[in-house]
Picture 1: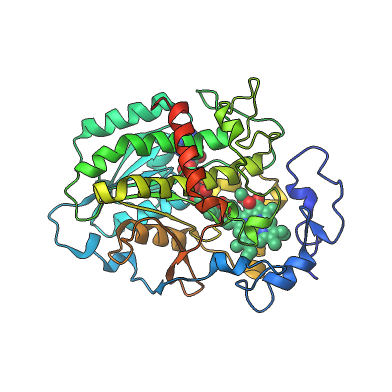
Picture 2: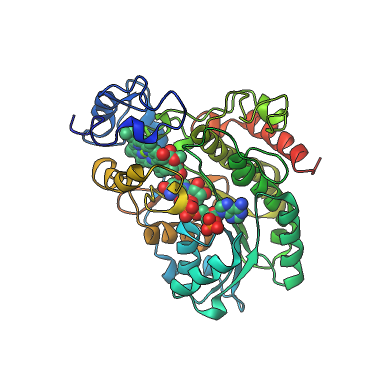
Length: 396
Ligand code: NDP
Ligand code: PMR
């Protein structure tokens, strides 16, 4: 196979000491035999099954609808006299910025860009050409629960109703040898990507509930790499929350583990685990609150946006080769602009109001309800995750 090792040598993305060269034979990339995976997943279709396991189930459309572009749809298609207010976390770059821009351009949304770096966000909005009256930047550092609570207070002081919340921000530390920690002492990837968003979403649920907007939505960005029913989700290290013993121990490394499953720190796995948490949280919100509040809860995989800042911590050669690899080999690549339109659809498209759904898009950019992996759709795990997360963020 032309792709084998020579294309993306495993040494470039090995994230742990001792793995950099160890065992990386020409036929394997990060421990995955490409000849196996290429045969099964890059042959005639990436939707085919993998080594006898029905991986294709995870990326099979249950319902496929070609959704209109965001520009052509008013929020929920109903007449509304005011603009919708949408909070987008991590809107200073990548998917968040592209989504903010796509929504702002419709003229029907006021985007609250919830960002840790105020100046960077202002500059990003300006250089993206967003009209001044279409957005505000508000400070939010998801690596601090105090900052999350302060953000909620500030937002409420603005007097704006909240119609849609998009939990988009994330960090990824694939090459870290040692964990880093949030202000509250949680391992950073799960602390920011899951726990910070968990508190934010829990706090703002009552604001969404109070809104008079035709459709209120809470969207948490997920990913294919947290779903082990896909090829991408089977690239080691695989997501696995285990029995959540590390989370129960506080994820702070003090006498316990910094990993949710209680294992040794692994930055790439911590990110994937955090995405499983995001997808489980969305479903638990749906089960607990959809009927009672009418709010739509959704998650999505926007496609592989291989050019974003998410990979800033990866080695330079990875960053160089990853976009062409995704573009020409896996064909999973999407531009930031296209991904932004997809997330903007989940925010505002009248045909995407179903709650509890994990949205994906096919190669024609038609949205479909995707199937989550067994772990990412396990209701018992979701409930336990919810309860432990409540304790860690001070809600229980
Ligand atoms: P980027 O790195 O471009 O964007 C991440 C954003 O999160 C940035 O705005 C960053 O702020 C912000 N952020 C990071 N830490 C914090 C924090 N402590 N508090 C507040 N904001 C923070 O990556 P992407 O656009 O790729 O990622 C966006 C989402 O898309 C993530 O949820 C990711 O998991 C998901 N995703 C991405 C895929 C991809 O292929 N890129 C694929 C599937 C899902 P700053 O600008 O200050 O760094
Ligand atoms: Mg992956 C259909 C195949 C496919 C898709 C859609 C992705 C998405 N990836 C695929 C296949 C492969 N990847 C294969 C065959 C390999 C081995 C060569 C591979 C490797 C790989 C690495 C090292 N891929 C990666 C990495 C990362 O560091 C990225 C990651 O896991 O971040 C957590 C990543 C990704 N691949 C994707 C997507 C979307 C990512 C980005 C991150 C994310 O989930 O947010």
